[in-house]
Amino acid sequence: MTANGHVRNLTEGRPLKLILIFALPMIIGGVVQQLYSVVDTLIVGNTLGSHALAAVGATGSTIFFMISFMLGLTNAFSIVTAHHFGADNHAMVKKTVVNAIFLSAICAVILSLVGIYGARPLMELLQTPPDIINESVIYIQICIGFSVAQLAYDVAAAILRAIGDSKTPLYFLMISAVSNIILDLVFILGMDMGVAGAAIATVISQAISAVLCIAYIIKKYPIFHISRHEFRPDFRQLKLVTKMGITMGLQSCFIAVGEMAATGVINGFGTTVVAAYTTGVRVEEFATLAFINLSQAFSIYAGQNIGAHKTERIQEGFKKIAMLVIFLSFVSTALIFIFGDDVARWFISDADSQIESVVSIAYQYLCTSACFYSFLGMILLYNNTLRGMGELGIPLMSGIIELLSKVGLSIILASIFGYSGIWYAAPIGWMLGMLPSMIRYHQGNWKKRPDKIADAYPE
Image (cartoon, rainbow, N blue to C red; front, side, top):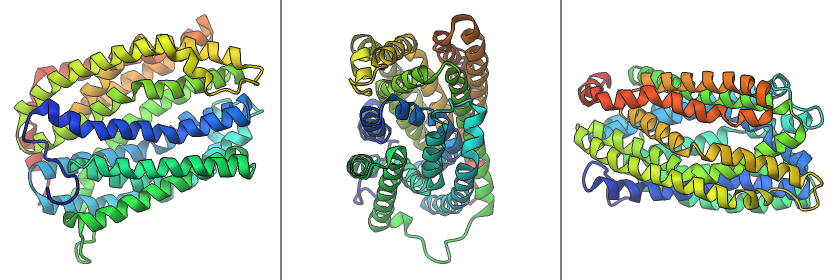
């Protein structure tokens, strides 16, 4: 396997060095992936104005809700594959890939139907302002209606990362990002297609990355060469992966519902506040992606090592990565306070009459949220570590606590302090949601997971 591409065994060698080398392409990939949404936002905001910017921004939580279950499935595929790869069981790696293909095909059909027919009811439920709802619905219908491209890439990338290859998905994301920029300019500026053009550009770019990534896997990795008689679902393992996928999908759904609840409250304050929140979220995605992707990388590290029965390496790696995550969160907080308002201005045209109001509100949101980034970094690390080892119950509880906090506090604090009160809902949810995962990890019961995993996966 080491002769084929960029496979990396994370069960041998110095943990910190291994994790950083593995995580770096994921962090860079996170930057590249943000370009999909940021380029749309920059071009839409600077050419079509804050009205169109608000229309695109209002779709964020709805789109995330629609794809959240899919994200849970891809994470489940990644974890199961990492367990088998760490245990050097290539036959089970193949079975996981076959099951991933079948489940993904079913999800793609369901998701497309939900996107096409559910977009308007969901946007109406969120009280989207009437002057932007039509454009928001069109954007969702295109992005989710053709989400099979994103799903195909996410599954392929998740499986590659599970065997230690974090570089290949990055290369194809870079190609896709360049395609997205070019197509944005063609559809929005050249063909005057407005918000629909931005959605079409994103879908086509995702399709390019998916096709290239799958073709590369077929060509470079013999372990994924599946014969005709092997291409059938293994229903025993499929049941296990589906159970994991549902659990992890629910965790993503809880986060998405929290975002939708906050968006619904924010929508009640008008288009200017919606545009400001959209801008703030875009900036925050860049500010937090380093420690977000680092914690995701650690889940693969934990998965491979739990499969190899090397729990002591998980402990050693966790201590060092936790210190790094906290350091990065402090750096991000400082950068937000120093440069947050200047970066927010990039997303709005200077000619827009609402620019000062939008930037001022966005900066207020960013500064409030940034004060709590260390809690965000640690809840992600604790939960991803537990998920990587197959411990799903406590992260699910963490997600429920975070959801209830965000939904309840968004409504309560908004009624008392106005829209500025909403900015505190998510941070408080991070702090409360972190507690059960932190307690579970430090109790150490997860050290018995290797034996449970061996019993759980049928040969």
